[in-house]
Image (cartoon, rainbow, N blue to C red; front, top):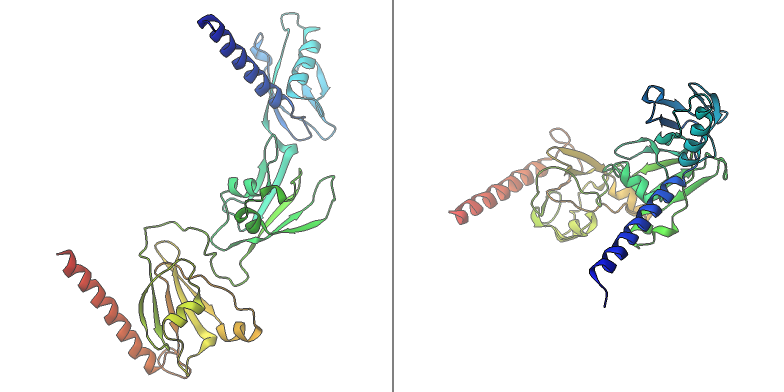
Length: 325
């Protein structure tokens, strides 16, 4: 039977081992050029200072002058500094080194990310983690088109095109290429110029409906089902009319509390056999214009449909209001 004292000893031993492992893992980082270090002498605080590792891998410190830092762990460098300073000041027996900026372990991120710029850590994680920690991608970012440009000692200048989206959705993060110091990560933009439908947008919660008006068989308001794309939306509305101008379809999409208008040449995309799949989002308004003239490029039939469409929305609002009462 295990006594309370024995249990306490086991727990204490485990805690010490965990702490030792944590310290050991942290100390594994090798200091490099451009790292910013803080050197603390707790016995003589007047000598505390912050220094940058120069291009030769050295620090310039008070009392001892230059000392090689690159290639050493913070613990090893602290021990080395303490030994040398103690020769001039016997009251100092140790120094503590902390890395303030891991500039030698830097990756650069640009393109369609929320927070482009320098990414520096003691250990560089996987590509997907880096993108997430830079704020994720913008509404127009394309995770299928992420480029990694090697900028360090490994494969300098080599360019990799990575489909991060497939790796993430298939839960296969280990398949992503390893990222090394000084690599450049570029997140591409959606080729269609349309927002990425897989990226949630900020703002108020939107109703799960979409609107179709213009040169379609049944303009109106439709319930939005997950995965509905533009082609399916047009089919649900009974298809387009013979005089529909498929070269100038407009989509009014609310990304937050404002709307963006996108122009889609659906005719060209279908003729090429590679239509851009635009997934319909909540409260999207799909406008299919008529061919021909009219006020501001809108035919008279279009104006009739707009009136019908507006009447449909008004009727819906009045019905909801009546039911609520």
